[in-house]
Length: 306
Image (tube, rainbow, N blue to C red):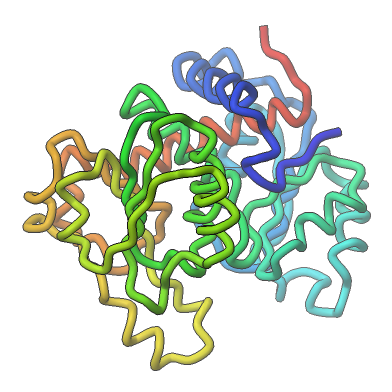
């Protein structure tokens, strides 16, 4: 039995197969409409989510399966003090596969050690968000035609942004990747990721504060929101939340073939006027998220569709 805790759980070759499967699902949805009949997905979400929870559920429904679960810790027995290990043992009696989001780093790992069904890490604290990373990889490959040889700007909350951390881990395995890390001093990429991932793998990167300085040289811009829920006090959040706002004027500085991605939800870091720019790809990203999660569910359940 296999779980997904980190994007590193799949080799580059396995990721290619997963993305190829997602591409076939996009092209031939009817072929997969009954692949998971009789199977159940449990979504165990201990903190709020729109896209991640609903895209997992949409993926299973598109495959002909069923869904169950909870959307907050308050609506589960966690509010009574039940442990993650006891919850997953229970859920394993009801479902065939589960997706878990938890505010504590490592909670899905605890779950998979006590589970008798595949567990998908749907985000744990500021640590990892592997299914978003799979979505990002599929989006980049679909839009650019490849996953190597490009300069990627990561902008905003690089300190707490689990989507950024996961994406860096995944992309350093491709040749010709370099990063521009765009953030204020207070939200810089953690030093352990710079040293243990970027430096260790000899990945070129530079750190800048001004978004305008980075835009002209990017193949891809990955925007993130400043996450209120990761701050210890309101004052720091208010001070940082409007540090970056991508608008039409700034987009004029960017190459004509530079795409803008965002894991969503956005607050105001991307102006709505950018939505009509053909380079704005964040809503396409949402759709790719359903295809890749369908492919992931099939892969973890070891279901082959001929």
